[in-house]
Length: 76
Image (cartoon, rainbow, N blue to C red; front, side, top):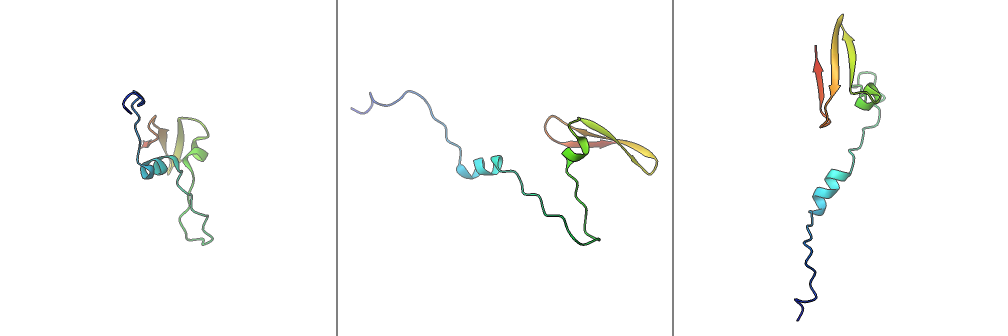
């Protein structure tokens, strides 16, 4: 009788592929040596622990905000 030996605890398993996609950070590309290449700046470098910063572009001030869900919003 193996029914008496079974645990009454319900166990849920996630697919291994999904777990790996969630937990692994995306690799950042190496800086390009070409002067015409697109420049990349990490958002945490811009925000430096703050939730928002002001960016001046062509004499206009914009607000860059990070949401609780990790999205970025740029407003004028």
